[in-house]
Length: 114
Length: 244
Image (cartoon, rainbow over all chains, first blue to last red):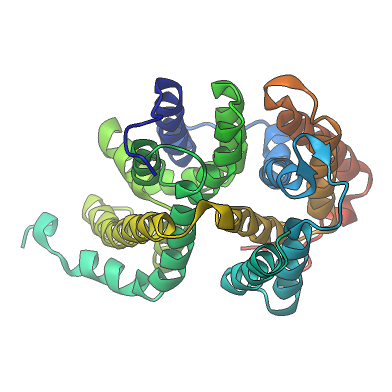
């Protein structure tokens, strides 16, 4: 990892905006003095948008390679996710999910060269 | 004694959240590893780990940054991931509203999920008097400080650890796994599980869209379908376990 090399303004601005996003979402209802509430449709949308956003980011990360759905079975990622999810359904707990998933991932990548 | 200098509540806040710091540190360590392996430069990795201070939105932003998505798509995605904080902020309002805006923003920024949870467990209601609220905020400050220090320290350790591991191992994948764990914990009703499935499928199907718009397409599709289904089949959003 090089310190300054490859640093570009666009990424630094993105990091700044992500920080602002943290402030705005955490302070949402106490930024202005007036007490207000979200309209009912927005409150309902709140139930589904976070999980949809996470799934929208990660599913392509797991099932796609170079912009195409995986065409080989020799990719460590889906197996690692299956192992992690299996642990989650068995025991709950995030740490076990990570350890189990990464064990399968590293085993297949480093052991079998997938 | 001037309540501003009474540190009993500050220390109580630290003590009560201390038991949760090992789990948080593991999460911070992993976020540090994933961020260091995301292809960002050293300065960018450090800035991100110190400033963003919201693990899930940070991890979700990494693949978008790597793909060169436009800023508004990155922010819109991170905003959706962080929507739970909006619900929290409605609750926190009563504890903070007598402070000036700058202090409110600072406290809000520093209050992550765990500090918020502990605060509401200790004091489900804001105190009616100013001194009571001051004590509640000291409690929150103690817990937030300990969480912040643990998070930053663990992230930095993760970054330095990741530097000694070859990039080809692909350790950044640990971030994806963490988000998988988060999706599974959020999928506590059939309808929320369906939201994840629709969004994931739509994001894959629409992958060819420019600007990483496939993610926003996935969110929009999932939210629309689930809001219609919620009206016609309300039993589908019944939680399998009681919700926090």
